[in-house]
Length: 122
Figure 1: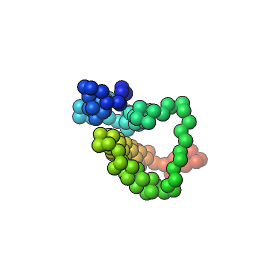
Figure 2: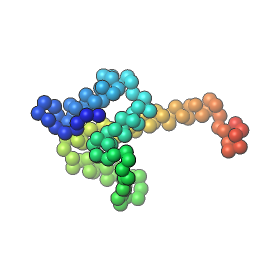
Figure 3: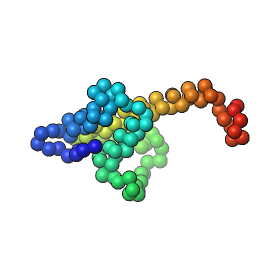
Figure 4: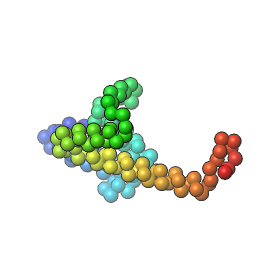
């Protein structure tokens, strides 16, 4: 994914933008639910410095999805503008493709029916 740190020639946002275009094309024409997931994993490694082999420890004090989202959005407001924009774009991009994936899954399920635990279509 390249360097996320600012350098003399490019801002963090410009570097991020170039990585997105390189991965998905200028109009995001190569974006699919699968490669968006891969891109998000790479971003987590790069932005958070987390190695895929490292154990991630969650210290989440919030107990509901709603509280977690509120906490996330509040924390984004405390970040520098470039970081906030990148985080919000990534979240919107991931959620959009998750929605597409769910929609496609429902359509395929309706075409082929549900298979029960007994292996018989219902």
